[in-house]
Length: 313
Image (cartoon, rainbow, N blue to C red; front, top):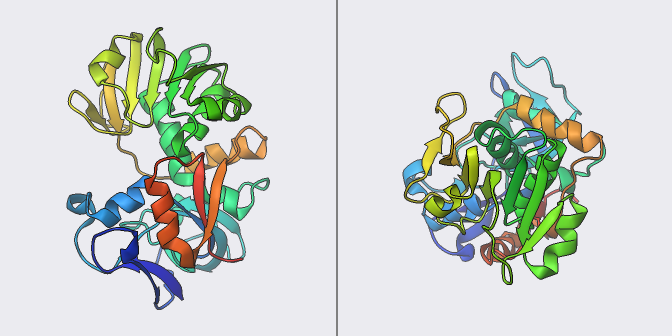
């Protein structure tokens, strides 16, 4: 099979297309024929070597955490999935391994693909959508009628966070640029702040979700309601790592969320998508062979929504 791999840390040019053996389904796993994957900032941070302490320094490395495709093989002990099922997942393999024509993943992270989403649209969802869901639900403890501020609302996580916060019944204020105003409004934002012309932190919020790490935690915390939370995707001093089910949430705290993918959480997103309450914003599509260009585009950090790799035409 064809797969994108890197044999050393470096820029986009270290990503190469190689011929590798197709994976086999071990006990508890399924093999997915990959129709599409997507590019997330964590992918090129791993490729650059920024995350070697977590993902190791052994090569070749196979990246890509998102997959949408068709179940091609089922391992022993897997009862809920069968060959031919259209599915999607956030891989729990080290570094992902979804930039390939086939990938083997644990069945416990795989959910049915939303009927209303194409494989390209579905592949955009898992990592970014789950990051948004878990940040708002488990860390922010967002409740109906509360106020959420989504910073970086036009980005990969931000576009899902706006929709999810609205689906949870919150009043959503989106922070974005003037050119993305209508996009985030179409996603359900009730109010919009142009960060280039307006003060971002001017009111009180129950959850401030900073998807781009643009705010100083201490300042953001001053704009929280008494039981609120500042959630960021960029660690900084004063921000605690939050592990759902383990970390005791403190009122007014500042957190960076660490989470483990599950099919149960992905099914929450599937439900909203099937109801027409969650859609993917696709910035651009690239072929697997154009992985270098896809990574270079992602590194500009100017994508509107998600960058998708179309693996199977």
